[in-house]
Length: 349
Image 1 (cartoon, rainbow, N blue to C red):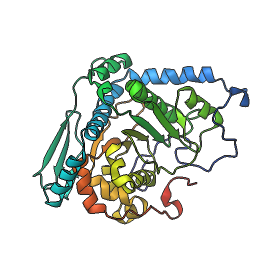
Image 2: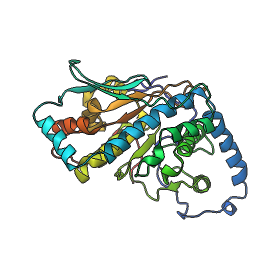
Image 3: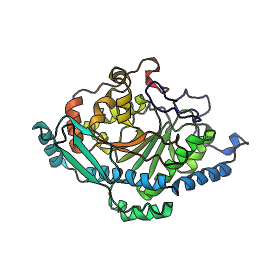
Image 4: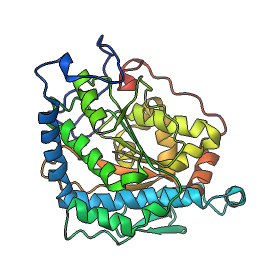
């Protein structure tokens, strides 16, 4: 069954969208004593089982290659950039060497390709081949990541997630959290922060997240978090406005530097543009509408056993030359998004 935008409706995932805050106390450290019926260790065993199940699949080994490659591109682009290079990009953009009408197409895992609508301009970003997909085991993939020399990068990597939902009661949300935790394990010591938020999280769910060394965000940011280091954002099946808010915050602060630090996994932007009328998207996702033609999009292979858990998800990011072209189209003023009624598709503060 499809919704008004043509997306497949994910059945069984409870509390996917942001809901009003409950009246439960907000404490940084919680104990199992709050609810004697909840056994933390028993649930951790169930979640660990989900993590192991996902990590041993072809779905994981194939897609973690794409995720790592995207994050490495962002990290390398950031660490190699200096003021001269940024000025050079602006100069190239000013003289039309970086076309304004650049169109980014989804590609397979062999390369990440940027082409213009006239097919006259190409940028190829080769994907490292170190990860072996013929042995989809978490330890094997971890070894492959070491071969990718992640430890050589000076900057840490942050993981950010909104909208996973109630993973104690919903199997879909539980597998999505397991996927997130499996990714974090791959990055190891390079990822010291894993910030997670959904207003539906119960005290017990916050306790579970803290037991995995995740930082539960204390307030509803409405997705408006600035990226100050390479950031992998996981927003599975969230509303368009939540993606829009994250893009706006990183476009409107610190000379738009945050956009060049962001790798976003969420609903396919190209599918959103294709399936949503422009008049609707201009109200619910104006920055998504303007920026997505300049972003690289890499589709996740939905080969997981349960097809409705990771359907229609893609990796999105924007590199320096693409960003320069995008700023010419979007700037120079970036007004904070304002939504009317149900247009927000999430619960605000």
